[in-house]
Length: 228
Image (tube, rainbow, N blue to C red; front, side):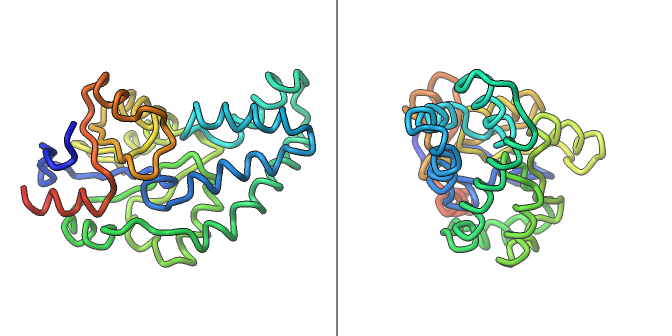
């Protein structure tokens, strides 16, 4: 799966759906470290187990991951006050970092190349947090279809926005996780895997096994489609 042999004809797409972490923002490592920091007071081994789960389930919301932490790692019932505490700890750990992390090169160029195409963010990140960060960083102007995140999962968001005719087909999902591909497939959207910032082990094997096209990042993708 060569990065310089993409076959996507962008002219056919009416909607582009972007994951956030690892696609638009270089924030995957920020989130990984934040899961550990938020839970380490329960024990370092327990916190590392959550990190491992997070790495295996990229793209799933923090709400789901913290519920898993209580029920499957601590073997406890989920108590709302304890869940809220972890969510607050996590949010505090990531918010400042999201304001300063790297934005994908090629984003402006790709937007210029797709003036008539609707853009959306569909992320596992917290929706309110995403909208605040994108607004303060001046990135929200690109995403005329909206910025969506948890607590709703990607399957719910994609289905809802298709029903609302915000996502108009044909549509393409740009993601960096196995869950992104699963959500895109469930919604019957085309998919391309972005590898540079992905935390998927053996992403190349995953793409090969699922016959997915891949590219390193948005800059490479924008350059490639400009040559189609």
